[in-house]
Length: 98
Image 1 (cartoon, rainbow, N blue to C red):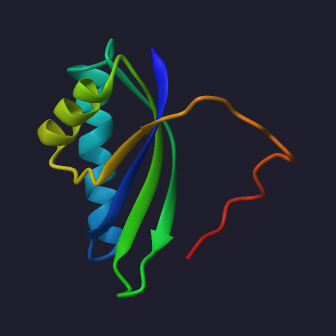
Image 2 (cartoon, rainbow, N blue to C red; image 1 turned 120 degrees about the horizontal axis):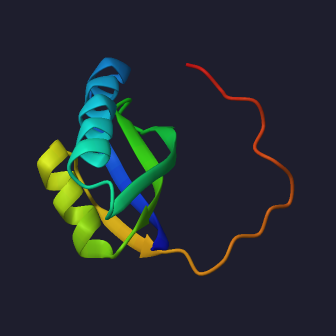
């Protein structure tokens, strides 16, 4: 598996919509595609139009598996980028809540 960043810009109208999408993603990832994709974390983005987007970090066998997972879970995918390396300057801060 390799590490990928997935941009999902303006994918949801609200945090509640995103919560439903996260539940679908978890179900598909855990039940149907556990050997191909693993959701690591997501950063929720407040878009300029006040919609909600995400930057998601996944482990996956490849971009095709990420696209299949997104299709099955009804998730948008704007861009998939393979992560070449990780540089940690300091740990993530405490979670930010809207």
